[in-house]
Image (tube, rainbow, N blue to C red; front, top):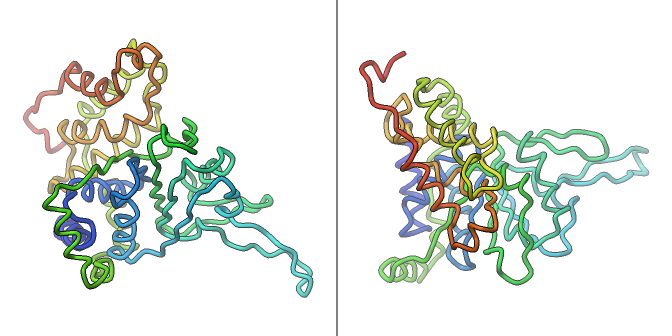
Length: 317
């Protein structure tokens, strides 16, 4: 049932976002896992289109905020004003009051404004003038950013990067896919052709199902060893945090679900390890000098850490 629904969601999103099926699957896995997504890529590759497509297919309330240098924290969290007629203060919702928030070009605003999203992403609530307001459930933040080297950008602080479950890069479409995109947009916007394939309630049901998935101690120790290896690597200044370990576990479960399994195997961990962990690493200057990236270090760790063998009774505890 979950797989059938997932394939339906993917097919609907593909109507507007073409040629990147694996990216669609990974975004869907992250939504199932209860995480937030950071899309890091150059302008014009479809980051906003992808987010809009998911808001349509999942029938989620959607808001977009375009980050600029003058965006204020209150634009995100909301603010209170005094109502003279009622002789009381009233709360006015900010951009986060929705199921799916597109934080567009998040690295073009100040660190103070960027940090306004921290509580919303971690707690599913915002606090304004000492009063805490819950956000709709589920709450999903899909943030986009141009490469840090682009003009006018400010790198996200490590504490906020750690709150994104995955960082994904879309890349340019092939020539064939670009032709399909041009033809699809000849007469209408393909976003309007997307049909609802799931709801907020069904997403919450899948998240509850993930909690029941079996994950043996061998797999838990395996993913922990992978994360500990990032902390001990000679070229890494700061490795994967305990929050990252939790994110890796949840994403491995989501990967297992899309593979029609009710249990997690080491291959699920390996499939999502780079997406979950690359943005959490801070490399030492030596790594930059040698031209070694976070992704390369993680792939080396995957090759070096022993994979647990598939033993009898793997499916059941």
